[in-house]
Image 1 (cartoon, helix red, strand yellow):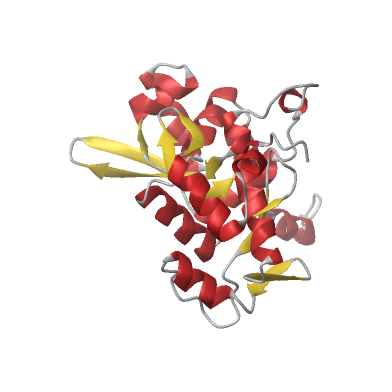
Image 2 (cartoon, one colour):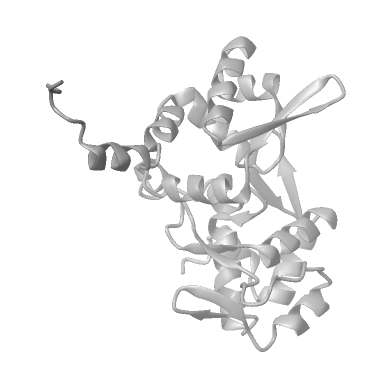
Length: 249
């Protein structure tokens, strides 16, 4: 028997089979309502379907469809507590990727002549750490104070790391050997780096617990309290004018 027809290109088939399915991620991000839902979830907290529907300005039924696609794409996860189902960003890795993607988006609307920084630009939550102008300034000061050392775009322990942690009274989970206490995270609005990782998470938890920072309803923006400004000046050498961006520097 003679076989006819073209034999399949096995090399091509194998290559196609192992390609990452970026199209699935792209499709999940393509809808403006799903993007708004993800931005709301970048607050770091878990929200109900109704809350996310309100944030995206869609019906709860439509939000459910969007959330299902986001979860299937691996961008969000859900958990049930009592009668309610809560949704959140799937992981810190997903949050980091979303923040990096945000830096590729246009930001002309954020820097009009004479415009004072918005609350979201000044200080906001980026999943489980502080972002915006405040996050960038704090990160720069940690390096200047030798709490952290920047080497080849990687953060390592500085000579004053332990003294700083003890003095400020935060508990940072021990990191595995060779892993850094903080990682660089390119800030969406500032286009400079703030830090994520164990140290950044521990500080944000402390700041919220003692009310140096306060969350806002319906926004990722963080309010710096009077005690917060005092703490930032004491441990980071950051004045209120510097944090608020009114020092003309």
